[in-house]
Amino acid sequence: MIEYRNVRVALLGGGTVGAQVARLLLEHKEEFASRVGASLELTGIAVRNLDAARSADLPKELFTTDAESLILGADIVIEVMGGLEPARSYILQAINSGADVVTANKALLATHGTELFEAAERVGAQLYFEAAVAGAIPIIRPLRESLAGDRVKRIMGIVNGTTNYILDKMDTEGASFDDALAVATELGYAEADPTADVDAFDAAQKASILASLAFHTTIPLESVHREGIREISGKTVELAKKAGYVVKLLAVCERLTDPTTGEEGVSARVYPALISREHPLAAVHKANNAVFVEAEAAGSLMFYGAGAGGPETASAVLGDLVSAARRHVIGGPGLGASTHANLPVLPISAITTRYHVTLSVFDRPGVLASVAEEFAKHGVSVELVEQGTFGSEAVSGEAAPTATLVIGTHAALESDLAATVSALAQLDAVSSVVSVLRVEGA
Image (cartoon, rainbow, N blue to C red; front, side, top):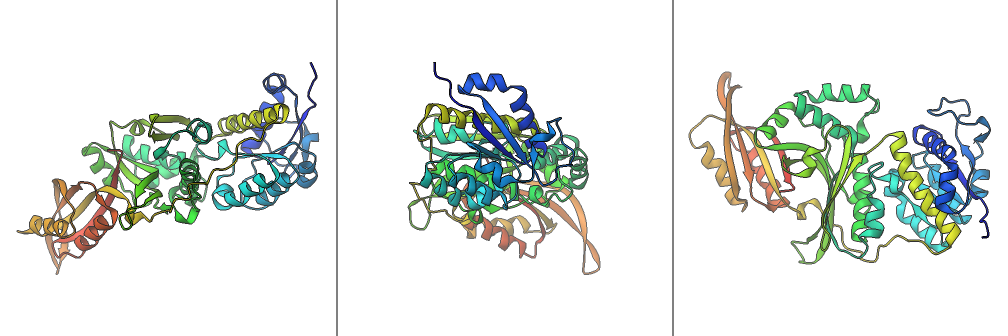
């Protein structure tokens, strides 16, 4: 038997994930060799600071600040440094030198994915990115390979662990948003600046990647509708709980029909939504992630597990590394990005959904009639109406009694639902629109 030469692996980034990738690669070197059919040789780890603390005890001689030399001597380049630059330039350099690339960089793929995949296709290189979405959960490979012969209709997922931890703590313990965020920060789930998580930028990047894969269509990041969770209050979560729902930040990607042209299109959006407590996604607690896939032939599939963490993300990276190394040993073209469908990306106004609207209304005769009239004017059917506790609000110097009115709708076009809420906010009988949440998974 002819032994294949060592497969040379360059690692860009020595942070939490990078250090764990290197540790596992070195510790299980012989096992990886048996899986691949050749030894995987870690030729070096490119870092910005040679003296920075690491989460694993690694040989100092592996570290270098010369990323370019490391790239040029590699068969496979692993990029876990994050950010757009110099990660983009390094990956392009690796691809153009003939190396395959494994990356966990969701922001880069969502922003420059088309450019990177086209560069890889030109030279016959392969770009792997299982770790870019949902950490250790295998979702990219099933969409890219296992479901390649099926027609994915819809994806609905919890793809950000920080926001799921916050919302879960608000739901299970009655914590306020600020208190839950403080705990998430203390535990390391949230960064000092939590904007990327709580304002849903991170989840939108992942939605862009998932939708592009599922629908074989380039979904630019700017086409993903995005709403964060900053406006979710303890009262909103409490009312949802009483109605049998849980609030989750969901990434929703689906095929739908353009209401204007009647042609098929796709939608990708991220927003906090209500989901029935009987739905599988409602049982995803703490910082875990889950992705629910609906396919034409395969039916409903759910992928669940840790969405982040050094060892967990390293597991996905190393899975890609083994696949890439096997390709080097056995040969073959690998899989390219599929964008053959080229479906139009439709705006949020084109989706069909249900609303759960909470209003603070003045306790006057005719309030329900005036509210119902606005729904009727916009062609939106009301499914349920519940009246909550009374309060009071100062009006013209006097305290006027108010009540909480919760209204659930039947499915309708987003454009009609949004117009209805806008009209309700202008009614004299309505003190304020307390919250508006879409209902998903019903």
